[in-house]
Length: 66
Image (cartoon, rainbow, N blue to C red; front, side):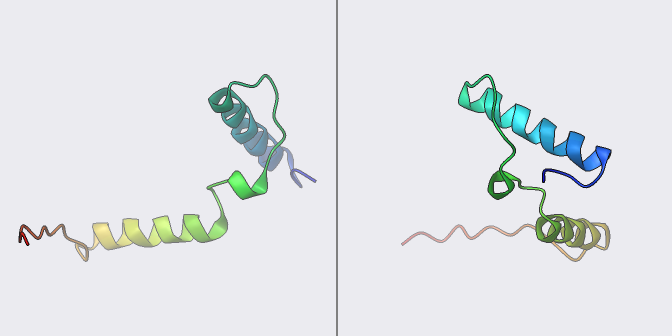
């Protein structure tokens, strides 16, 4: 099954549509393995956003050369 509710079904159809366009195909079935919106990934993005909002993350460069 590709979705338990209309919202999920439309979201997954949208993902399949963009994947088909990217691959130059007219039609493509939804592939859960290609879906980057997994619960784990969404949780990680939420944690990163909270870290940014709290000032817990910063950018650092290492310009040492060998």
